Image 1 (cartoon, one colour):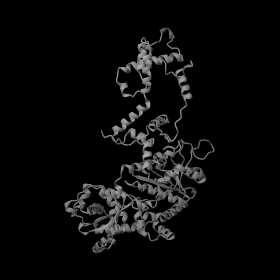
Image 2 (cartoon, helix red, strand yellow):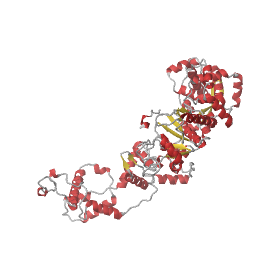
Image 3 (tube, one colour):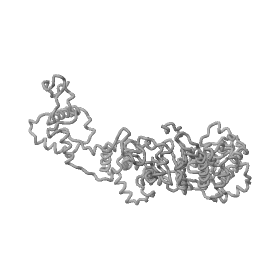
Image 4 (tube, one colour):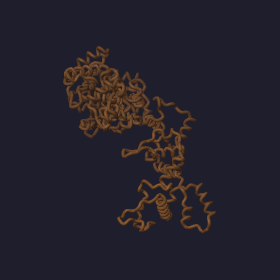
Length: 629
C-alpha cells in the first residue's frame, strides 16, 4: 500500500497536508491556481499569530505539491520542532483555524507515531480504530476532527476496517457525508482539552529574563526576536570546533555588554539555564561571584553571546543574495495583496523572509543575524540609558515542580479527574477523603480482579474503564452451577479432555483391564475424573508440605480455627490422609494479593515499576510508605 512507501518522518518532526475537499480533477492548471490563491490567503490569515511566535527549530511552512500517485495536488509542509512539543500542537491549532476559516479545505497531520491526534483520545476510540485502520480516515475539517466510519454492511458510509481508502475517495466521502464522519463528542473534547488556551497560550509559553549581552545582540533581538532560537540551539548543541570561534569574539565583543530584557520560550530558557558552562579565559567574558544579585543575568548573557558568535562564524551568504531571494519569490506579490485586503500590510517583508513559506527552514540564521546587524544603527550610550526602564523579569519557579504538581499534570494528561478542562482546588477534608478512597484495600483487590477478568489478547490487556465506578455484584447460583458442571456432580460427562489421566505409565489407579486392546482408553465419567483429580491434588499437597512454599502465603484464620475444632472432635482412628487434609488450610486470596502488591511497591523505593504502573492505570493511588524503618 502507498502509506507503507511513505518516507519516514524524524522523531522530532510533524508533517501536514491541506487538500481541497471537492477539487475539479479535469483541469489540473485551474486546481493549481486555486491552491496557490488559497496559500496566499492562508499566509495573510495566520500572519498575526505567527509574528508573535518563536519556533524551536523550524517554522510552520506551506508550499504547493503537485499530484503524485493516488495523492492529489495539495499544500503541505514538514516542521521539525526539536525539544519543544508545543510547536507541534500549535501547528495543530493553526490547521484547525485554517480549516474553520476556509471551509473547502481539509487537513491531515501526523508524525512518526502516525495519527497522534487519536492518541489524545485513546480511551474513547471505537474498537475497530487502530494504527492500521486509521490510514486516510482522520481529517481536520471545518474546525473539527472527522473520522471516516467503519462500514460493516453494504450501503453504509465508510470503508471496511481492513481496507485503506485512497485520499481522493476519502475526501469525496468527507464532502458528501460530513455529518456521518464527524468524530464522537468525547473524542473531539479530548482534542479540545489539549488545545485549550490557544491563541492566548502563546504568550503564556514565553519567559522574559534580564541578560547582559553585547550591544549588537540586543539590537538584533529587538528587531528579530525569533533569532534567539537558533542562537540557543547553537550553544546547546556546541562542539569543540564551534567553540574555537568563541576565543576572540570578533562579532560581539564582551566590552559592549548592556543589560536588556529578552523574550525566550520556556523551552529555550530551560535549555540555556540548565547547562553549566565556563567561558574560555581568552574570550574576555568574566562572571561575578555566584552570590552577586545579577549573576544569573551575566551567565545567561554569556551563554547567549556564545550562541550568536557560533552562528555568525558559520554564515556565508551575502546580503544581496538574501534580498534577491525574497523579492523574486512568486508568492511575494500575492502575499502583499492578501495583506492589504486583510489590513495586515504592516507585517511586510520581514515576516515573509522570516517564515520562508517556500522552503522549510531559515537557510542561514547566522547570515540573518549579520543582515539585521548591518541594517541597524544604534548608540551604546542610549542602550545603557534604557537599562533603568526595563520591565520586570518573570519568575522561573515553573522550572521546579513538586511531586503533587507532577501528579496533577499526569492526571490531566491521562484524562482522569478533569471533566471541563479546569480543576478545582480541593479542601483539606476533601484531600483526606480522596486519599483514603484512593488506596482502599477493598478497591485494590476489586480493581485487580476486574483487571484480570477484563478482555486481553496478544496485543495486550485492556484496562477496565470503570473498574471502580461499578458496584460489585455476585451471583452465587451461577457460581454453583458452573462448579457443578466443572466437577460433574450430576454425573454429566465432561466436555474437556483436561482430566484425562496422563499418568498411566506410573500405574496410578488405572486398571489394565480398563484399557482397550487398540490403545484407546475409555472415557471417564465425571465421578471418576473427580476422584482422580482429588488424588492428584493430595499427592501435590503432600509433596509441597516438605517445602517452605506454604510459609510465603497467608492462611485464612477463621477457616483454620474451624478446622482445628473439627479435628479435636474427630476420632483417633482417622487416617493419615485425613490429618493431612486438616493441616492444609485455605489461603486468604485477597490478603495475599494486597501483601504481594505492597511488597512490590516497597521494593520500587518510590520509583516507577510494574505494581505502581498497574495500580495507577486502574485509578488506584497508594500513598508513600511513611515507615522509614
